[in-house]
Structures are given as C-alpha cells and as structure tokens.
Length: 404
Image (cartoon, rainbow, N blue to C red; front, side, top):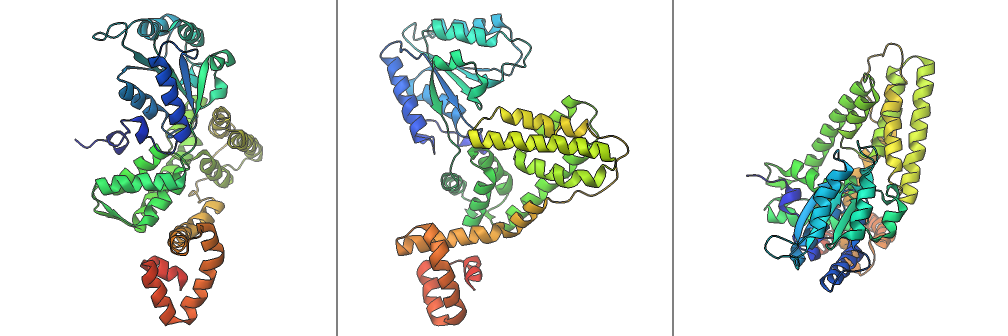
C-alpha cells in the first residue's frame, strides 16, 4: 500500500521534529514536569502556521513518554456535554492497563475554530477540563488570537515558526534518498520556495512530482506549475458563477495555493469577464480590503485575519458581480509571470552561491553579490581558468550556463 509521504515520514520522536528547536525544548520540559506530578500549567497551546509540525509534535510527545493519545477536532459539531464526555472522562481517569498512575495525552486540534460551530459552549468546557484534569492536554491552533485570553493564560504557550527553506530542502532530500529517487538540487529549491514555510505542503508536492519517476529535474517542476494554473482557471470560472457565500468559500478552500497568489489571479482577471462598471467597483473594493487583511496577517502573525481575507476574496467577489459575464481565458498575474521567468535562474544562482561559499569560506550572500559577478567575467574571457574553477566547484551544466 502506497502511504502518503506526509504519513510515511511523520516524525515518531520529538527529536525528529525539524526546524523547531525552541518549541521542542519547551514541550519536553513541560512533559517532564508532568512526570513529577501535576504542574501549574496542565495544558500546552501549540500555535503557529499550518504545516510546521504542531500535530506531529503532539503525537511524538505521546510516543516519547508512553502516554495514550486521545485526539479530538474542534471544528466538528459538538455540544458542551460531548466535550465533557469525551475529553473530560479521559482527563480525569487513567489508562486501561496502567491504571490511574499512567497518563493520557488529550489533544484538541483546531482549537481556534470552535466559534462558528453549532455550539458555542466548547470553550467553557475546555476551561473546566483544564482546571480539573489529572492528565496533560494539548490545544493546537493556527491563530492563538482567536482563543479566549483566560484559556491562553492557563496554558503553556508553545510557538511554532515557519520552516526555513534550508530545512525544507534538507528534509525533501532525505525523503528522496530513502525513496531511492535521484534529483537535481534545483527541484528541491523551487518546491521549498513555493511552500513558504509549510513542510507538510512541500512533502505533498514532492510526492506529486516524484510518483512513478526515478529522477526529478527542473522540467518536472515546470510541468507541475502548469497543472496548478489549470486548477486556478477552473476556480476563477466557478467563482464568478457561485450563487451563495458558502459555495464561494468552499471553492477557495479547495484551492491549494497561497492566498496572496489567489488574490493576484482574481485582481488580474476580474476586468476581463465583468463588464458592468458598478459590479467591477464592488469587486475591487472587496479585493482591496482582502489585501489589507492579508498584509496585517503577515505583519503581525494574526492568522485570524486570513478568514476575513478569504471571505472577501471569495464571497465578496462572487456576490458583487452582476450582469452577463464576458468569456475570456484567464491570464497569469503580471508579477507571477515575472517571478516564474526568473525562478529557475534564481535557483541555479543560489545553488552556485552555496558551492562558492563552502569553497571560499564565506557566506552565500557575499558569494552572490561579490564573487559570482567576477566569475562571469572570468568565464567569458578566460577559458582555461574557467575550466579549472568548474572542476574545483564540480559545477553542473545549468550552473555553467549561468556563468557563461
């Protein structure tokens, strides 16, 4: 059976969680305090962007300490009584074979998504369980600001950061080596850059690209991005035909693309299909407000703003249009066109800079800024020296072409 690589290579131990040294250290200390008795902070709140290891860390924590793992999802429809029955019972009793001395880890995922469900008593139940529990509890959230302050005050706050491109590249390379798939380093660079700190998304993209292949090259990345463009074309066509806010939101949720890029596609293509001036003005008003919310979300890590931006760029756009729509083939946003044209070159440049940095004992930044321009002159004017440099650095054909 072919498992998704996200599950196949899911970390089993806390030490295997990559890119989050401080968070893992804080979690380990908190778990050890539970081993000594009931700590002042009975609950830990894991918060941060999607795909950064929060859920994996909770599962690894249970494995490391031999605790039973009980998981619930806060986005499910629930009542106050249901939360108390499932989580409350687990929190106040021991395990089947270990008795009351053994621990259970209760994990409540999407803890920032309780409001908006059928029952608003969920947070009251969580507050009571935190106060009464004799077992460790982990709440998981993308947006800590969406959780009531009194619950945050009772929790150990554990922040997860976006994973750096360097760490993502290293992890993707490890997976490909285990899968015995050869690859060009540029492929990993492009996937990591596109993932924007989301390791889970990067691994999923990698598997999509690598399935059925023995080697990955830059051509595979180009084909993959072409597939993504087809998905956005379908999204745009359906968005402007949506008849309800709920339908528009679901279309946006089904699209696997960063919100900034989606907004750029909408902004670029709306004038092509909406001819009525008043409707166009309303749509641009929704787009501009969505852009403001996205900016605030990025600047202050206020991820709750993403939901407002999502509503504006989906329901706000679809329900503002009126009149007949003009048929038109969607155009790639201008800034993405420029970015795509230079993506491969930048990946080659960065790969080259890393080799130079290691060889010259300097940083990649200095290599890009000060050494590569000099090497380009050498490669154009001194063939013998260029060949010696190429051999010393073990340059690939794309890197040689870049310098020539």
